[in-house]
Amino acid sequence: MNADIINRNNRQTHHIMKHISYILLLFAALLLPALSGAQTIKELEAKKKKALQELAVTNKLLNETQKNKKGTENKISLLQRSIRKSNEYINALNSEISLLDRNIDSLKVQKDDAERRLERHRQEYARMIQASYFQRKYFSPLLFILSADNFSQAIRRFRYMQEMAGFRRQQAEEIMSLTSQIAAQEGQLLNDRMQKETAMSAKELESQRLERQTVQQREQLKALKRKESSLKQKQKKQQQQADQLNSRIQKLIAEEIKRQNANKSQGGKAMNREEKLVAGNFEKNKGKLPLPVEKGFISGHYGIQPHPFLDKVQVNNKGTYIQTPAGSDARAIFEGEVTQCFSVPGSNNSVIIKHGNYRTVYSNLTTLYVKAGDKVSTKQKIGKVFTDKENDNKTELYIMVYKDTEIQNPEAWLAL
Image (cartoon, rainbow, N blue to C red; front, side, top):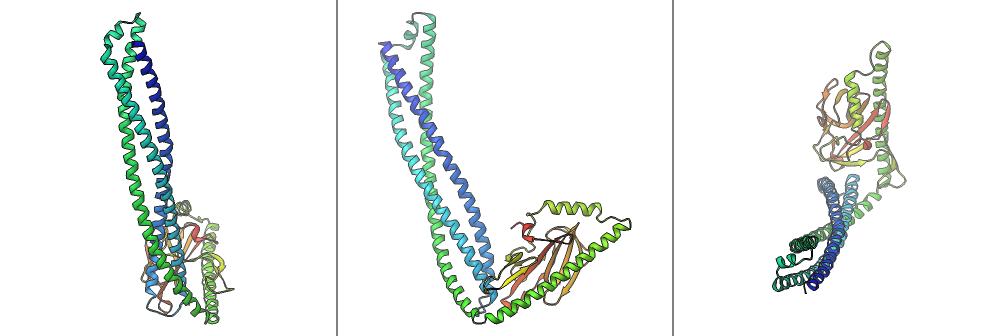
């Protein structure tokens, strides 16, 4: 009888252990996608937050133009950007909703499977407890050990009794752990469903606003089309003014470097130790430098590109245009020394700051807060950006970056 009981308990033990191993492996396999999904959700939240911040700046500037009911270049540019950022925000919301749907479906499958296995696990555990009770009722564990044929068999029986007691404790702990895991899955399911509802509501509101802005943009473009010829003439004049400014900057920087080289040929140094350090640090921070305004966005990219809404018109930017709210100040993107403060008709005031053999140029400023020879620190205010009251209060800074006389793309240096 004792042998039958032992054999039956051994079979039950092997069967239950097999199920426990399977459950643990299954839970680990299902948990990894959930953790991966949570990380992706976090990334989408960051993307959504960034789109909202950019949208807020654009809409703030757009609200400043609402007093003027006529279609203006600035208003249409802002509408285009607002529509683009709204689409980015909606796309991020769509991605988040799709991912939440997958997470919810996955969690449901995990939870249902875990509950079924937990129930079978409980039933098997109950049978094992019953067998243990039957074992204690019909024979004494001590007599079971003492009735062994030899000492080795007695040791094995003693270890068997210990293992069975330890296994029952382990079973109870596993049941509690699996129960806790199912509760956590239920909590995650509830959280994901609420998050999905929030995202869907935000998407609906943004879609409605986007539809209104698209209609508004279409009407504004029609109004501008009627005066396209005069706008092209205006754009041609603006390009000429930009070319004059670029030429003046190029000339001033070339003269500065010529003086440096003359100093070097006379036994001086092109760059002293401090300037070399500043230049090295400037170079190390490529792609990490702050915007030259506290709040703003790129309204004109570096290089040759088609005009945003005028057909068959190209613009050639030697720097980057950054639009910012009215009343904003320009600020240095890195520590350095002011070498030039000058003005060009149509482009207002400009400031050149030297960073070793690098230079940054800030144009379209009114009041200046610095003068030639001043040392400036990163983010120090250097002047107020001009606000064009004839173009819906458009406030736009023009920034350039040079390495010696070689012009650089500012967007490669800024943390955008």
